Image (cartoon, rainbow, N blue to C red; front, side, top):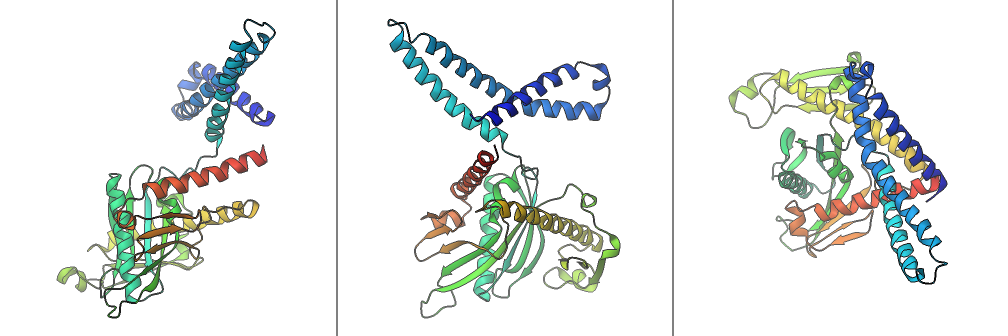
Amino acid sequence: MKPSLLAKLDQLANRLVELDELLMHPEVTSNMDNYRKMTREHAELGPLVALYKNYQQADNDVSAAQEMLSDPDMKDFAQEEIGTAKMRMTQLEIDLQKMLLPKDTNDERNIFLEVRAGTGGDEAALFAGDLLRMYTRFAERNRWQVEMVSESSSEVGGYKEAIVRIVGFGAYSRLKFESGGHRVQRVPTTETQGRIHTSACTVAVMPEADEVSDVNINPADLRIDTYRASGAGGQHINKTDSAVRITHIPSGIVVECQDDRSQHKNKASAMKVLAARIKDVQLREQQAKEAATRKSLIGSGDRSERIRTYNFPQGRMTDHRINLTLYKLDFIMDGDLEDLSNALAAEHQAELLAALGENA
């Protein structure tokens, strides 16, 4: 293990000892905010330091076995012990490096997921509906809750644009790599000559802010318009100005919400989406800076980037960022995203490990 990593681990082990001592002092336990902060840090450091102690023990086992090599009667045993201990050290080093990777503070958050039809006209809208169903089915498999926030339906089915809120622990960590351009190749139901068409949709996955107030939004920067909602909803929805459109003037972000009969509830939903979009812009700016210092295959969050192709005639899905092709498109479109999600997470972790090694 590199000396810089060993030094960092020694520092963290010393910090855990310090926390043990501090948590025994009445002045610390009497301040609940400080106490919670320290106990959280203690809980995070505990498993890491325990793993590091196992690594140190394996290193000591190697040293002890090397001392026995000079004894002819113990030589074979010592060599076997050295080999076993070094294999254990190699695996422990990998595990320690993974635990040292920077945590994404948004991983545990709920998300807003937007699907928008792109090039391809009606077929793109139909595919947007298929994508939304795919993510909804994936959410159901994980026992997450899905709430429709805003939708603009297409006349032939599907959506021109739809926004859903997915509520569940770890939703962002599992779906954050879905942002980008999704291309579909298939024969549309309206195609009479059996020709394959290519259409596209864009997906945006945004972590939900804890509170709208967590994102700095100046009320003076907002233009709020109300209008009569269109589409299904009975007589009431078309007789009152319940739909809300909020424009964030500095960024040009526009959010519309008309799914509830209450103007107040539509405004509250629109503000939540607006906060998530502004937060998302900040995240993508941060990711762009990181990508400037190292080649990031996955985490750029670039909406214009074509990340995936769904080829229905061949029954395959290809993720272009990691060159992964899976021949089980029917299962994927039914929400079976585990293999894909795990592969993307593993590649991202490999990138972070490589960056950690370069900076060590």
